[in-house]
Image 1 (cartoon, helix red, strand yellow):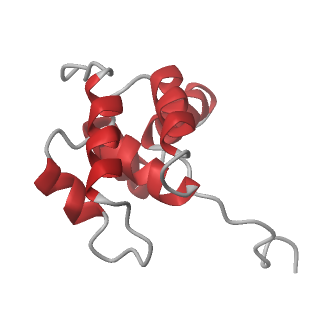
Image 2 (cartoon, rainbow, N blue to C red; image 1 turned 180 degrees about the vertical axis):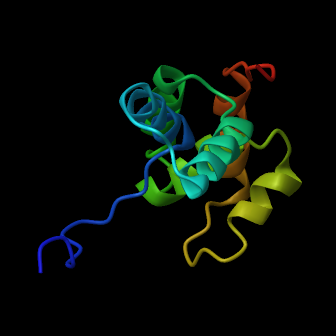
Length: 114
């Protein structure tokens, strides 16, 4: 059957999901589940898509892409929150690297609720 096999799986940031849904919403009616997803990513989305992509690029020097997306979506502002993100990771960054990650995150301004 067509569409029953996953060819590629790659995490995308909440900002990108929101952009996809906004474009889709212009031409189609969103289902209940799609509306819930849009509400969720809208509340989660703290940075613009451009800033999110730049941040992920910078974070990839310290962590893999999947974790960089998670950090970019959450945008933790202190060491405790950052440690929670890495709690289940096998190759968590060192304390010095986490401090550098926090310095990178501080450069980005969080959007206010729309």
